[in-house]
Image 1 (cartoon, helix red, strand yellow):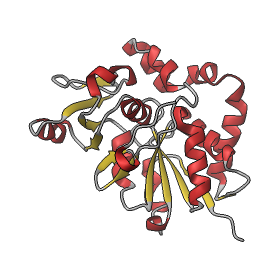
Image 2 (cartoon, one colour; image 1 turned 120 degrees about the vertical axis):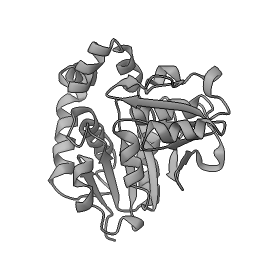
Image 3 (cartoon, rainbow, N blue to C red; image 1 turned 180 degrees about the vertical axis):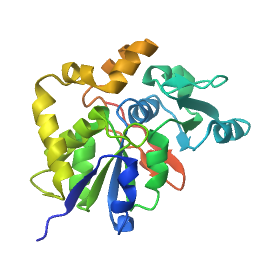
Length: 245
């Protein structure tokens, strides 16, 4: 029996090269620092749904209909919004039962590009093993979509793609060199991922913004078995059920 293929898309700038047949494929959107981590945290803390939008103006429009609104650009919270893109902001007392409009520099764009896929899953270290098991169960060709930074490749998303690809390598065929690059990076960094990521440009940006503690949250491993799904312009948990471990 032919194995499904896993590919790694290192930057949204290359999306058109991977788009053929996407309606029959799974896509895992990856923005480790911080959008997809923040999404996972929000659902762990009881958020009802999240609506990724392209601009702060669209987030503001949804806020007028009862949504909370989160907007981030270049790592900073857009003035006038309840949240930026720090997972530590999305606490249970703030988000439980709430709908949240969400726009970020990189992650929300990657989500919107992926809309036509068979399934679009949210990936983070928080849910990596549950996500790997879901991909194995689905048994579909899969694209690991790194959001990167402003159309450029970044270390943290590539490393996570490698970690996820490594977990499914025996049941999936590697589709192209990008998968092997990501897996090799993960293998090299695996002994101390936090230490390795100190060289990442976004971690350096964290230091400038004085949000270094976000890195600790973003690198927590398997604190969640929830897999948020993006469909019809909205992110929800399957059956709207939040499961805590």
